[in-house]
Each structure stands twice: as structure tokens, then as C-alpha cells.
Figure 1 (cartoon, rainbow, N blue to C red):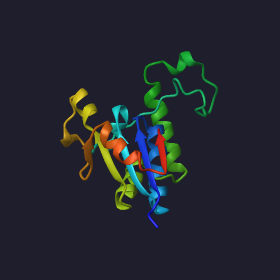
Figure 2: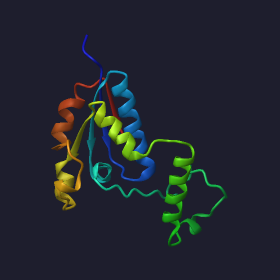
Figure 3: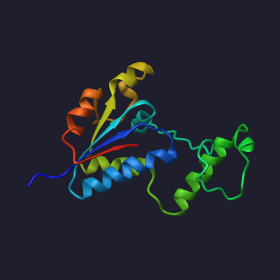
Figure 4: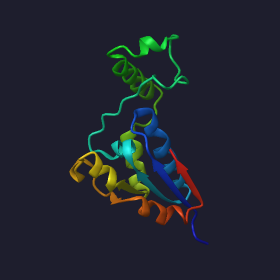
Length: 155
């Protein structure tokens, strides 16, 4: 019996949005799914060799805050850096794997990662900016495997 297939499109490049695609992909691979991830637009940041992912509470009213904070204060200079520091500390304190570790687990589990060539061209990125072992392609590459997948997720 052929294994189940999972296709994921990762479109977000912030620290908080890096976790869902890598957690789902690594879990699916551990469960025997053939898993492929397509990274496009800001999601392409998740494939960079040197990650500098940030988190912002702006536009994310569900983000748990230690104290209630009006939106106006969240927009002040330095707040994004503060929020990122707080989130990284929380991740470390709770023993949650880092994005780099999760990405590495996906690679070890055979998850295929595809960087969007159109996005690379659009933002003048270089392939040298990205980790080794990934493939490159466009929307047709995604549809090639997503059309045969049992599950397709847009994250």
C-alpha cells in the first residue's frame, strides 16, 4: 500500500509562523507520510542558512502577553525586538525545539523542501543564501505533488 502524502505551502517568515509547517512536516514524516514543503514569498526566509526570525504582536491579537498592552505601545520602536526576545526565552524555558532543530529533523526524516524560484528572483535572493539540499521550482512544481497528496496545507 502506498504511503500517504502531505503537501505544505509555507508563506510566512516570522518566528511564530515558522513552527507550524516544520512541526506538521516532521510529525507527518515520522508517521510515514511522504512530505513535501513549498516555501514561497516570506516563507522562503525559513530556508535561509542564517535565520533571523522575528515575531510581532502587531496584527496578532491572540498573542499571549504578560501584561495587557495597547496597540499603540506595540508599535513603538524596539517592541518587535522585545517581543522576539520574550518569545525566544519562552521557547527555550519550555524546552521547545528551535526552528533550526525542527528544520533539521525534517531534513533527517526525508522531507523534501522546495524554494520558490519566482520569489528568489522577485526579491533578488541568491541560492547561496539558502541551506543545502533543497530543490527549486515554481507553482507548477507545487501542483505536481499537491495534486497527488492526501493532505494539502496552506500555512
